Length: 350
Ligand SMILES: Nc1ncnc2c1ncn2[C@@H]1O[C@H](COP(=O)(O)OP(=O)(O)OP(=O)(O)O)[C@@H](O)[C@H]1O
Ligand SMILES: [Mg+2]
Image (cartoon, rainbow, N blue to C red):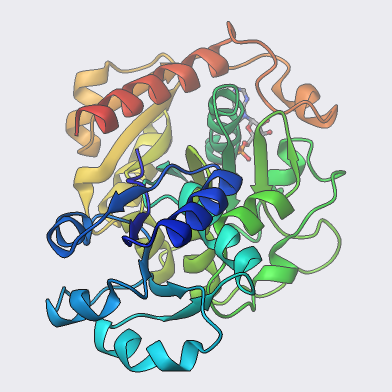
């Protein structure tokens, strides 16, 4: 749960005004009517609005410097409080009613841009064509039934996660628009602009032509915004030894490696797993019935999280634009649901 924003004021009319704006934004703020109360909630609140009545006293108490502090006033001359705002380390001064719209937006962001982050799962192929992209999309399809999910396609030479999910025909932003972006990306803006259907979105490249470049900073920002705005984020990691892949993997709660249970499939998976800087985040998803889980886990050096047989009709389902999971009871749907349940339980216990 995101902690509520903090309002610091004893001014009844200002408080009423701020409560009205908070209600419009759908948030229920904490109210501090003196300095000690304000200090108690100071660090945890995602946004702090300090009335000009208590701002000087609070500034004298020298609370820790932090982002997201604004002095709010209903007065003709906000310049008068500017020195106090600076003293308090506030980002700015908001005067009402002029800044009403802006304040409602900031308050809405508190709900939307919760620091609480979506479960982030990387998926990498233990060998070429082992089903990583398919499993990544299957995870998002299953997760999307209970909350917003997104697949971040980090493999420019894959089939396109939007295509695998049948989202290539849906309008929305793609890496061509976001790959060169600089600055902060709002969680809400990203969530609302991606191609999406049935709770599942994808950030991928335009199907036509050569994939546009993606700056590492844009990739980081997109991942961060995706996590703030979705319950589940799945990253389709390319099969490349690349510092950016390592960095993406390090931002994931878990990295799944798809392993085909043949001698060649396992040999490649051993190499692939050894290439990740933190083997502790790895988990295996096996395709095939050969070899037992324990010996595989020992050889590859990561626990087995799921094993599945081949899913019949997966290519047809993708061709029809329905995504890889057509039935919850098929091997792919069951494996994805099992892995998600395990990871969610771990995240809740942490
Ligand atoms: N669980 C599955 N059951 C049956 N077929 C599958 C399964 N997973 C993937 N496939 C098929 O295997 C092929 C490769 O799948 P996919 O693109 O997901 O692999 P990949 O590991 O991402 O490949 P790459 O190494 O190119 O990234 C596809 O034709 C797909 O339909
Ligand atoms: Mg792939």
